[in-house]
Amino acid sequence: MRHRKTGRKLGRNSAHLRALFRNMTASLLMHGRIETTLAKAKELRRFAEPVITKAIRLRKVLAAAGRKPTDEQIVHALHLRRVLAVHLPGAATMKGEAGDRFLSRRDLVAFLIDDIAPRFLTRPGGYTRIRRLGFRKGDNASLVILELMPGEAGKDEKPLAGPEASGKKPRAGFFRRSKAEAVAADEKLDKRAKAEDEKQPEAEPEPEHKPARKAVRKAEPKAEPKAEKKAAPKSDKKSKKA
Image (cartoon, rainbow, N blue to C red; front, side, top):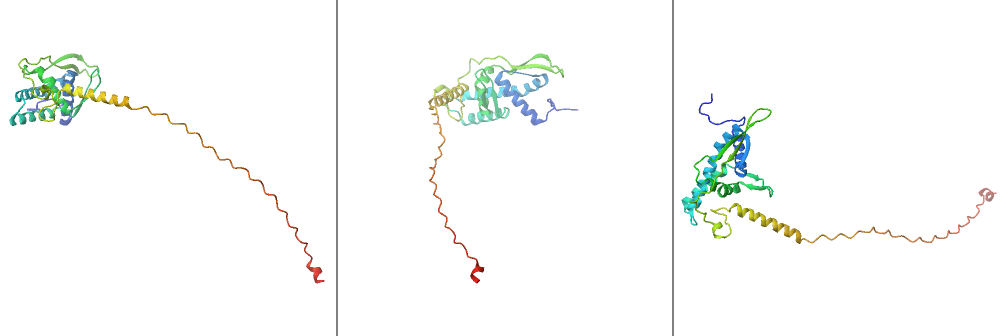
């Protein structure tokens, strides 16, 4: 009997479950909805909604910190960033009309703070909902759509004080660059790469190598055959003895 053991195993061990929920959480946050089974959706809600709550808390800490955060605010923000990073995968791919975009774990945390958290600042929990689709052919599993609730940023929200407000270049420290700045930086890199490709001169065609001609040796005049010396007739030794 599974007394005092909450959660569903879903036929996986603990490490596999953590990896599964991390990847599904990243897909839910980036795309706004995912299609899965009812059992996984109910279990994922218990994993994903606390992540959004921590992102909202971090957003409020950054807004209250201002341009000169105290040591306590810096430590608190750093702790929340690390907690968010633990619940997200090492990398993910965001699919879009303009093409796929690769996001690291640090980019996912920035996406949570800049895009997801402002939508639910005034909502006390319940960031997702489940919509049933029917049953899957084969194993008759119940299929659902798990999606984020529509939300709006709070009217009383203070803008983040940092490089985005001052117009300065983003610094690698307490504040993190926004998604818009990251997209603009990617576009600049693409334009620079295209400009470099256009500047490169076209390679000149290599001259055709003609086969080397073989040197023709002049035929040397044939030497006239030397006259053979006539051998003297040998006298018979027998006649001399006689």
